[in-house]
Length: 354
Ligand SMILES: Nc1ncnc2c1ncn2[C@@H]1O[C@H](COP(=O)(O)OP(=O)(O)OP(=O)(O)O)[C@@H](O)[C@H]1O
Ligand SMILES: [Mg+2]
Image 1 (cartoon, rainbow, N blue to C red):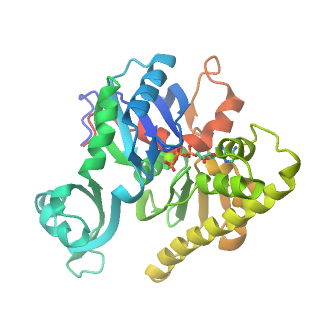
Image 2 (tube, rainbow, N blue to C red; image 1 turned 90 degrees about the vertical axis):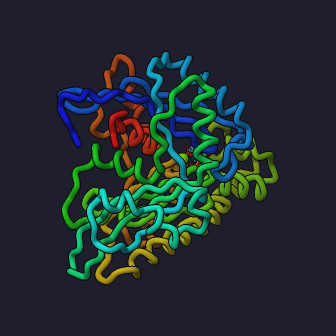
């Protein structure tokens, strides 16, 4: 419900990834969205592993540093989860209203969730009414493990913030696309967000996410392979991979290491997309939008386009967002855009949402 006299409160978005925390604050103006704050702070590799917070103190302190560095005054915070703590499934339920489903969801969802229903928070989105008159409707069921939500809300609280929404990465990406790219009716777009430890894949049709998958692979695999093939430390491998440090005489092995991991990753992405394409008759994907830090790897972009035969485009998370050139450098924003897909999407959430 969108009541114009109920002023919605701004919230600040934190994408707490396993390699870095990204912060975005945007305000809604008459013309659209305007960027207010933007920041990124690296996390050591052992702070968050496979989507679980291992070293909460480091995560809290990094949040505090970001808040201080960027002079963030807003207390209400939005964040998100991804990976194995999130289960998203498209299921078929008897046709009913949203309110009816809200009342019965715990009961209806139980058979689809591989954990005790009391251990998860359940949410849902009705995808379409009963098109075929079968008395059934498609619903996107979302279950997130409560202990993982608690870990994330705790670090946010410890940093002096008030956690108002914990979203899911792929839905944040859907929101980011909604404000930046016009919806083309009948067009299916795939989002592939390749982070440090997790790659999430989703398909959006007419602005709604209709399929998601996550793969426990990402930039760390590239770094580990470079480390192995060039026989150097993880830190050096990371710096060489991201172009912060020039490789020494062993540089000739670098393209082979990158190609080996790209091949594996693209294979897995293609497998997920093939699963979607095979799932219902006449399914197709018109375009793949890449985001996440690894989307910077050109060889990976090219290989993905070649192996999937689907056009691949790097996402511009700030495409439709006003940014005052006094505070934000245009070229810098372009360079940072792939990292901020999730954070920008989260920043569109308003406190009065749902
Ligand atoms: N220029 C670059 N070239 C290659 N890889 C890069 C570059 N910049 C960043 N990366 C890699 O991208 C990854 C970080 O991406 P991102 O910030 O999207 O991940 P994250 O959100 O922290 O992780 P996750 O979502 O998996 O928990 C790291 O593995 C990093 O090494
Ligand atoms: Mg991420």
